[in-house]
Image 1 (cartoon, rainbow, N blue to C red):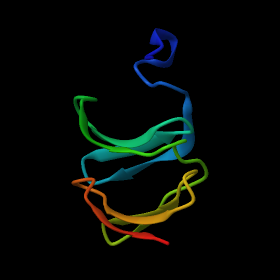
Image 2 (cartoon, rainbow, N blue to C red; image 1 turned 135 degrees about the vertical axis):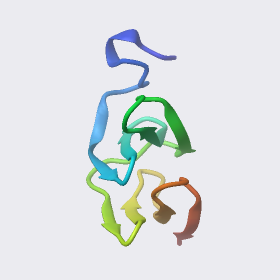
Image 3 (cartoon, one colour; image 1 turned 120 degrees about the vertical axis):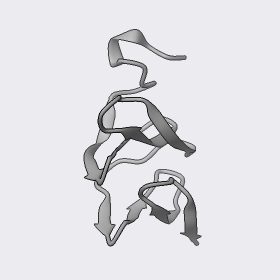
Image 4 (tube, rainbow, N blue to C red; image 1 turned 90 degrees about the vertical axis):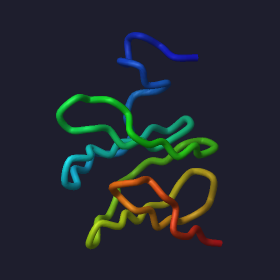
Length: 88
């Protein structure tokens, strides 16, 4: 359930936010990583992840790389949130 004290997040952010162009990317240790419009704060994409993600994102030419608590490593397009691949 959404808890108001966390401003709409289901858990406090556990990944340091990353800014790519007009997208602020953040995540939590519960259920997802999300991209927000930098000016409006509106969510523009979400990737559901069982048990969320913690640690840090790496940005390389518009692609995010991160490990999640579901045991997978991901490459994601930063602007769209489209998953390019996950491993294993």
